[in-house]
Length: 602
Image 1 (cartoon, helix red, strand yellow):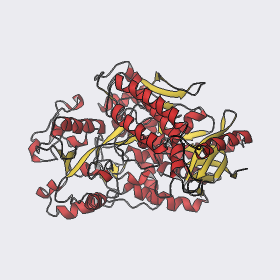
Image 2 (tube, one colour):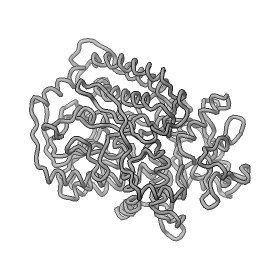
Image 3 (cartoon, rainbow, N blue to C red):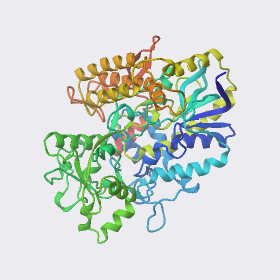
Image 4 (cartoon, rainbow, N blue to C red):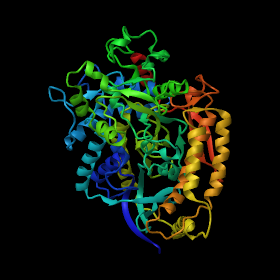
């Protein structure tokens, strides 16, 4: 055999916040756990989540509670969320934050010593527990330190090629290590996918190289369904200059701490075109500063903290109108608070240390003295693997998903800060359910021919004597998605994108990566293409079928919301021929009790 074999009860694919939390939970229940990470341990995308984790602890405003958080999440998601997932998330998030603190996480504190919480977009009250602007890093540090004592087996820098099955049931995964190219067969009773997002399908993204939609595509190929893949979040504030750092995230915490957005004329444009939800609640004096905001007087928020889809579209509007910054974005100014705070420089460095160093080192900008240039960047996919809310299991027996690759919680648009608490809440649920499934259903069997076939597929790019350059195909795909399936979409461009994706898929079948298996990134790219193309088609078909504008999905040719489409999610799957198909299904998890909470909260 050309592979090594490992045995475990639960295989967790992905070592970010969701994967680590799932692994810790499964291990604590007695399961033998293997965690497989595409990158080095500690480099998960969770570390880029800077602003904080949303949880209705009420430490800054005691009127906050899970019902308000639930209602905010549903409103942000335009009510396409899985209602039960949104309820579980809002109810359990405070306990998960306190648990993380008990495991050693060091949060910023209030004057009386409680965990400090800050404002964030779409949240009615200050709700984000944070550690400066390095919250995700603290989460990963804490989970790794806690998990390392659980006896968990780690495989780092290892990429999954395909999930393996025993009949209808998932039975493990076939993978390779990226350094030497050696193959690994991990035989498991249950598999938890926690692989993150799909950002590398786009040209401008905050996501690093690992985010090629692996978990989404692996689940589809195994027989699972995806939900709401048309909803791609373009974070309004990524770096736009210099070109080498274009797309790198600028945390929403800058705006949460008072940062304002202005155009090239110095106008604070976010006060224009306030969404109907906020009409009749305008401020008294917008010129006074960021404290005078849109919202009721008991829960004031700056307009820069409206939902991310709205802010992103407003920046694009200014750029298209010729009022953008010199490099095609807008200005984000936190330095203005020197008018309000005596030691503003020290305050900014304390509250936003990562942002200060990021702009100082990468762009030569001192954010304590001058504004930043920012613009929208592909950041997050609200859609993901369709799962049961209470177990996180997909329709494939034994296959679970959590974190960004799991779908349902966020609906049409994710609120900032909900991602980190999402990782903890549903990572725990997935790990617990996977361990229980393994215990209840026993072992699996893997047919060796199945493994041999996957091995042959993986080696094909190396064995071809000639063929297409995989980098060229990926770059063309990124251009197609950026230009035709970006922030503003329309039918003719989406149809054109589908044709282009089909052409690229045909070319990818002949992708050629000369050399051997050791240290061969061309080979890795050739294998990633299968996942990228599948996910890009799923996004595009979902966007084509939703003929309306809602949340993060904006159709130029259908600018209004559709009443009928407000009641359905888009589900994609592979048909018997392996083609991506999309259909609409009713929104799930809605109950009279939850609807009454939304109505009560306005």
